[in-house]
Amino acid sequence: MISGIISEIAKKLIEADAGKSTISVRKNDLWAYKRADDNVFALASTLFLLKQNSFFFTKEQMLVFKEIEKNILSKFHLYQNKDGLETFNFYRTKPSKHFPNGIFMGRFDHFRLPDDIDDTALVYLSAENTKEQTLWLKKQCKTHEDKLNGVEIYNTWFGKNMPKEQDVCALLNLLYLFFNHDLPLESIDKNTLEYLAKSVDLILTQPFRISRHYANSTLIIYHYARFMSDFSHPLLNSKKSQLICLALDLIKKEKVFMNKILLETSLKKFGEKREKMNIETNKNQDFYSFIGAPFAPFDNPAARILADKKWAQIFWKSEIHELALLLEYLILFEKK
Image 1 (spheres, rainbow, N blue to C red):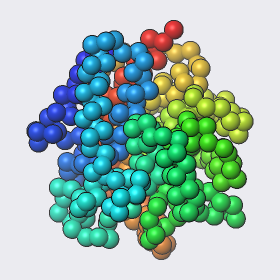
Image 2 (cartoon, one colour):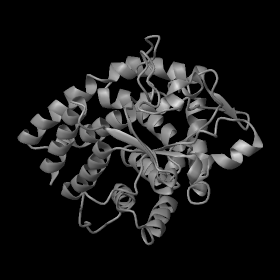
Image 3 (spheres, one colour):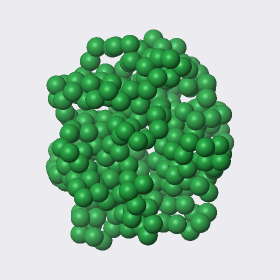
């Protein structure tokens, strides 16, 4: 099955290049909205997962993976900062192609997104950027920091006109990059880790508040597990048992197949013994890996009320990303 997944990802990338399919879609079923979408998040997330697990690939699988890697790496420059800085945007930048294939939002600069820490961190991780490049990035992140309750903390956006915000999944991806290069912990890193530890208490009750761009308890737990399985820090280690309990509680009532996969993956990463699920790759319709909340940036009470409503949000899906998540789950059971 692992070979089949790798080959399917390669096939879908080739089809997308030929204009026969798309790497991602954005949608809201409540108002029959669905558009083909082109974003770096799907590409970088997929490559990051494949690289993390490539140690397990056979020689034949590695050959296919190398073609996937070459394909995705060749596209990253399309999403790079419009002025040539080494930060990255969710959408293509030169020229801007935000909300492609749409009728309304893509026509207005108001909806153009600034570069962000999440996509940038995922690109750096999957492209294996150097420690020197990552130190440069950290300085950029510090120049766009926010103050939360009087303490400095990393901000999601590099842009000047976006409101300050923290998304725990984005922060975990950023810290994954910094820990991966063993960068020294500064006060802003420690403050961010404290924020992440405190946010565990809100995962079930207020997922949108702590993660505006994922807003799903399962996705949030998965990001904690991904970071904590590879890196150790006392503040987050103290939350491990709580995160395990949350995952176990959610999985009892979860009906969405891919959410079950992510919860099981999280539990395995936390060191729990689990039975392998029966994998069927055609049950991912209700899953999404990313959301947009168009009303969230507006600083008025009415917009804040609307921002977290499902009918007022946009949901992103990516078949190649979902296949990579399935592959990650399968390989966890192959490890000795």
